[in-house]
Length: 132
Image 1 (cartoon, rainbow, N blue to C red):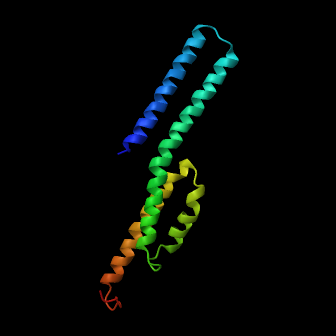
Image 2: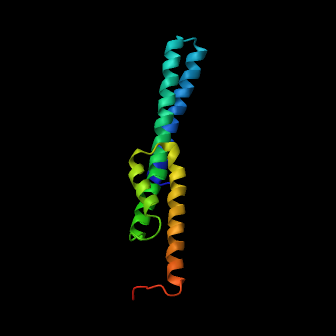
Image 3: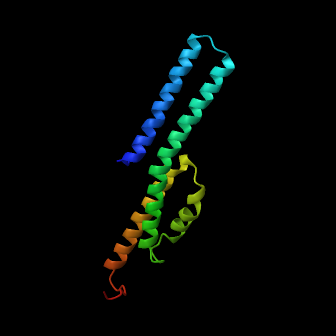
């Protein structure tokens, strides 16, 4: 579920874009200069990109950051996924929007493998486990 303030912001942006598109239709009906119409198309395109980036950053980027942090906390340094975790941590600041969902799958996979590794260690006979 998206946060209410994010939903409100994206909807406001989309309503503004809707008004811009209606303005383009009106300009076409009125036979306005093609360069002015093109400028409006560019403005609409930029506004859509901004709304999309806002949505992606607020949902996927924050989720990925949270998951990376969670996995780092859960991996004491001998969880079998140190290399993957460090690689994602280093890549995170420069990830492009289209990479976020793939990286989310990677960190989730690392988390699952890490948990399996820990469980296997706990159930292996002859394992020296610290006393709790």
